Length: 284
Image (cartoon, rainbow, N blue to C red; front, side):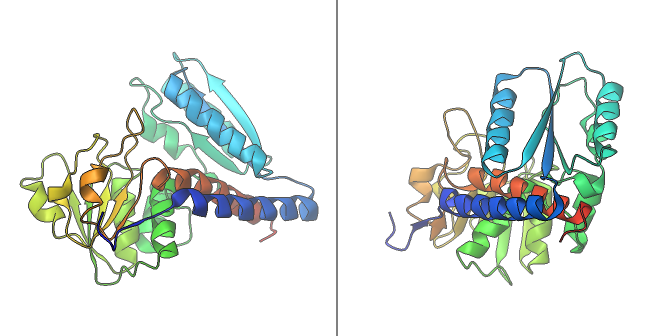
């Protein structure tokens, strides 16, 4: 490892964020008589999705946040899912809504996401939230991009004037993280599956965001010496999108998988759920 390389400990920062969210949730509950509540919606019984939802609900419990789980059969239609989410959006006892995705190939996920009321979109998946991220307005960030920015801030990474390269263009990760970086005055380049000569672009990155969803897709040859590497990949076997052993010899700062970006996602979700509850209860 380069003597300057440092691991960015997302687990430690996430623990601190969850502890703070728990203190705020307890204070909010005492002042208003109402505990923050996150509704999770799951279509079908995909094992990975079931595990993710269970983990999020367990973290909610530890933070003093109520969770209401809505389990729908795999055969649920888009219209039925939209009706379910609309009902949760209209329920004053629910302060945040999380639709676990993917919801299934037969589901129009965009239609389902857009049924989430903006003030309850604590996962930052609606067009309203994306617009707020893009224009620097009040709203909820997509949780993984928001977690990445918090981790960069924690390690005092000054983004102004830096060249940030995002590899990936998903609606809930690649695109919004680019907007958040742009809002911090970074110069942003998006790369994706049709980018030619990818390495020539990633080697120009002062900050490299790996969000392509392919294990060890980016190797040492993709990394600029001294770069900050944020690996948002989550692949089977706890493998990221970056070849960690190769990249760590070139990067100045790098997130491990697991223990880097992943824990920050859930911590951001819980933080934003408390934020949403405080706003809806007029107890900010």
